[in-house]
Image (cartoon, rainbow, N blue to C red):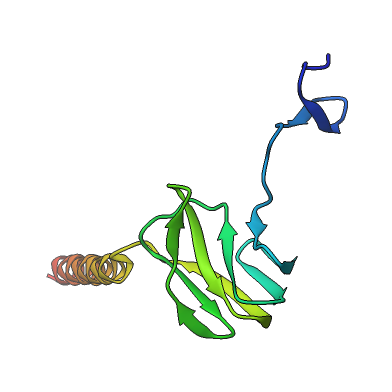
Length: 132
């Protein structure tokens, strides 16, 4: 059954997915051609320096590189990401690592080592009890 004001983007026997009116592209930069290679990577060709807007939620932990060089990721439209692009061809890459991930990974490793040490202690004490 059609929904007034919406256009079907995909339909099959099970469902219909509608395109919302007024949506924007996930990647955009005025005066640039963007070839999206993945959700976190793109190749751009810009006539002049521009700002790339990526409709991904801006959160601490996002980093970006342009041609392999780290660039600051800023907030745009209150919740999305934006970076500066140079004129010409550029390889853009975004990466996310939750804040404090290294500390959490180190704590998990320490916990695993303590657990394995405890298992070894239990195994030794059982061997000692069965030998006696």
